[in-house]
Length: 545
Image 1 (cartoon, rainbow, N blue to C red):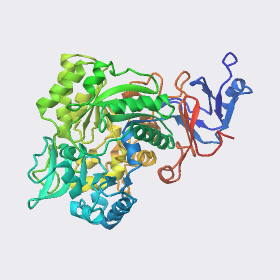
Image 2 (image 1 turned 180 degrees about the vertical axis):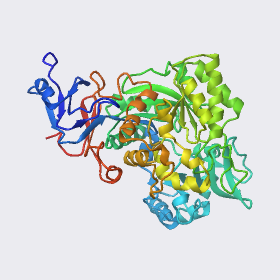
Image 3 (image 1 turned 90 degrees about the vertical axis):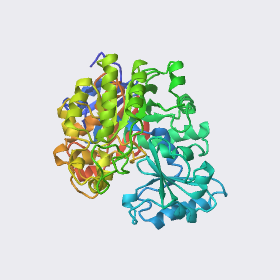
Image 4 (image 1 turned 45 degrees about the horizontal axis):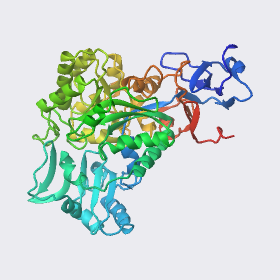
């Protein structure tokens, strides 16, 4: 210890979660953006100099900075400036329409109203809003209202008119545009949303950078220091790549970002590859990660592709966004170029399609550490899990889906599927590294419901779904730190607090290791978030003191 330099920061007198399976320390020292030492408070004394900032933990828990392994940082930041239609703001149709009406009152005629977050299963009407109802709330403005899952949306009549969508419009493959009695309802699913998405107002670079900064600061407030933006290029194409660079250059990205490049026809992947933006390029603040392919939708929206039908709808098995041939060709091309893959697949049908394509690509171009990922991977079978394990393919789930959508799962799938979904314990026991995430803004980036569900398997109403998949709080922290770093291929410098690792630290208001699940859910906050040894969030003022 005596030969080490004086620390920049020392946190002492608490509990330091170094890594799963490692002894819990009492203190930690940070220097030059890295972890210098961990141990007892007395061990840190020789490392404290005149310029060392000393933070007294007072029994609180410090962990590695959390890794949000699958979210949509840029879209989340954009949605934070839109109409917030989540159930906590509107759980009735009238309440939802009031939000649209209030937004219309602030807009000029013809200006778009963008809203996100409604959940038809939690509205009093237990259905999607109809375009004519949105018309009444905003007769002079086009409205685009996105469901919480992000896979369905409702447009009003003016929005459909601007997009040129009529009852005679062709439906894009892998999508749906709903009609009832020969009339458009306004509801669109998956690729069926493309005509309206194509006419939405364009964002400026400042819009993007502000959204990155806004979303990053919100994530910081929960102890999150790293994230993967799970579909870069979705709305604004290559301009999103440029905006991320500008956010870093101007100091407006207080979070480490892995960019997941969206692979769609006419998208950004070709240009990215030509410019050398392949998996692993970049630096610790902004790097290129995997390529994203969508294969299905959401279970709550009944668009996740299942081998078994949804309740009461024997013909409804969900939506396959691609044919088997298209999926295999896309996977082979991306794999051959050396990219890491992150494929959205929720239903067991989509997982099977994805798995077959990945197995064929790995057979033709073997790479034992390519570490492809299946995003969500919600309803997989034991056979699929065994094959994934053999191929080195990791699941990247959102346990919080049980908390937010579990009650709906049991209604649309009143069988064994909800209880066996997102099987964290089984995956861990099999040797997988399932990285916990929220898919924000699908679910809130708030980490506490995610932790709560991992250690209880309870929904927001307290229903236990799949209690045999409960994991310990230690495993839950590992899922939010080490596993996130692993599936993003940066476990050599992030995810634990061993000496030499990045000085990314979250300090929470209590010791999570001894707290009750209820206290974790409702009475815990992040007090400090440290990124590379610098404070990016301070709820208590102690860093500034």
